[in-house]
Length: 353
Image (cartoon, rainbow, N blue to C red; front, side, top):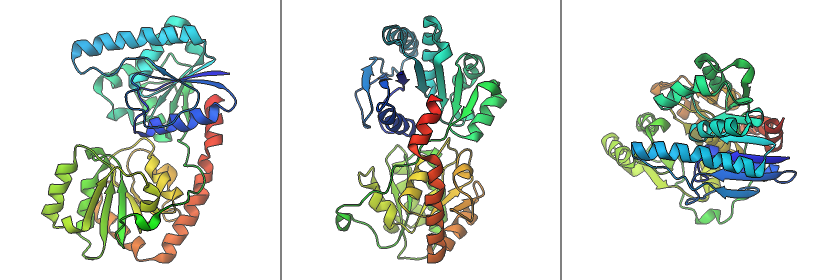
């Protein structure tokens, strides 16, 4: 089978990581092409052949219009050239032009588009276009059951919708040079872009109410919210107990030495970092935000789900888990069992089915 995958970039991001892993599995038995609009920043490895469509983002309104048209015709040319048996698109900025390109080339019957986030959090233009455009592909894949229901409520036909979760990380990873990483002795961990969506201000608010001077908060990631979060730490007087080292290469060491991982997001589609923490044997706590956490965690069994936005409940959950070795061990064991449901080989077959 010849598979064509379209995604805006292969730079850092959850959808990009999923394409990286799926394409590498598919290439073992199929001919794979991964088409991107911009190859200037390729962070992830990929399976098959990489195709540069040479349509990077343009910020001006006129430039966006020209770029949208250019993407449609370059995708159509690629489809005509390669004649794929299966076309899979990730993220709305790729979905809309590939739907038009597939229509021009008579390939709608082999097109699957994928929605990675709560559609109600998308740009207003995208929300307007979804009920119209998403009637045309053969399948619309939602990354979580919550996203699927949201799309159905927006007018996407139920018969076209399919739920396929993201794959869990591969088997256990051995940590090398563990003693050389600069880890605090006792800490809780947050991971993600420094962006309001990730709710690190809420995590810091909960942490500030824990008076243990030997407990640290570590937040891995980079983004535009750094200055605001640093100012908030000063306001809460926790600067000396807060570490924000940015994006790091050896995330395994940070996960495996943390007392727990906290997902404080205001919304998600399917939080990969939650499965990443579980994979690295780190007990997990999460706000019960839309969507994904309640489909990954069984609260009280494989982690703790906290009512969305309840800062006090989050603080109580953190204290409960960091002071109970037995509970942490139970959550780790149950988490590893849960992750077997999201094996990458099984997930990759679901896409091609």
